[in-house]
Length: 488
Image (tube, rainbow, N blue to C red; front, side, top):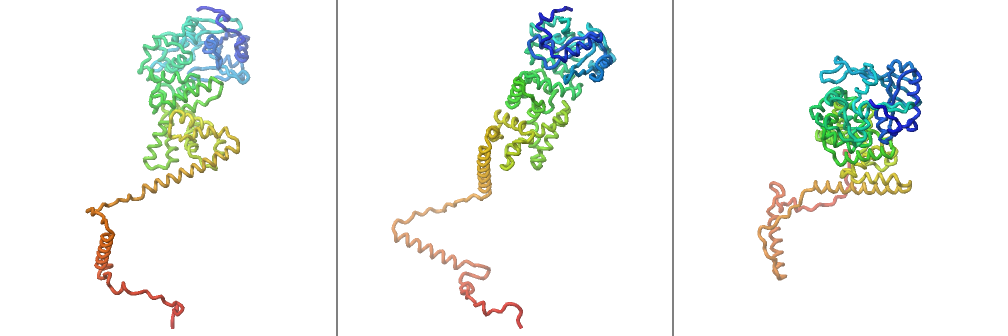
């Protein structure tokens, strides 16, 4: 172990928010050791801005509860932790842990319960990566480095503490964390890890709770380097363990959505992680819709049932919460409404609660080359920038174009339904007479032939064209002399 001065590591209390100092100071005054640990120390040394701060102490969760009272809540069974609230902020406080007992591991080696309290020297061994095993005491201004983690940060190397095989068996989620840190920090993965990072090893993720895998997938989506980690998920065989029916192929739509998500995070905008799940599951959803449409199901019911099937299938890998499932299905349903909106509903549709998410989804599809959008993504984008008068003109123009397209489609259907006219060519091509007398004689001959044919034609059985009934003249009767009704 080496004790480093915090100032030499680029650390100072000025970088720390008040809530983490409040937790550290309260535990110290109560007579316990308290340190800031984990990714927050690592990120500050790299010049990054940590999202949250974690603390570690020699106080047990029950003792932490006694110190903070109603501000503390104990959670977890497998890993018992204390959540301490300081104002509106939440700090996760863990207790120094000793090595797990063999009786508390599964057949595959995964730790089932880990509530064995220990010392700080035992706790650092339990950490997964060396860069996450530095303990920072802000009031004393020191950093405790037990495994030369500072050197790994300088060389940008991601190294596991202990045997990588054993560490992955203890907690298979560490494989996801390996790829996440490598993509986020742009670090090189240690060769010892690459040797055992095989397809067989990734099968251990099947033993992890789908709820926990969903939480880990959310961290992948929101870390700000999603476009960099997606190819790594495919190369290391993690993709098939996270996504049920999604082909391991990064399409133009998925890539554009990933870059758009990263850009929103970099400029400080909020994102909904369920949106990227809607992007990933879009193609399976379309394929399932086609399946139901081929069975004769009406489009609305086909879309509803297809959404349920796809999300239920994905739940075998990562259990998406109910509110997130509702969001995903509403985004998919908005695609149909935005593609062919009724003119009188356009204004109301633009103020819909899911309009923004549905529009972003449609525009990403259009920019990625999806011809099915019919340019409506650009239309809605321009519509949002218009004034009230311009919106009315745009809706009128859209209505005329919509009616024109409908008439054109109707005409095409009628043309397809009409039988084709077949022109019969004469069996013998006789030359046309040149002189007027010859042409007149030919016309008279044709008339005589037609008259003879008409005379020999029977209108009905036993009635020819010369029958007297056909030569009788119709006489106009005087209806004034006709008596209607019963007679005497």
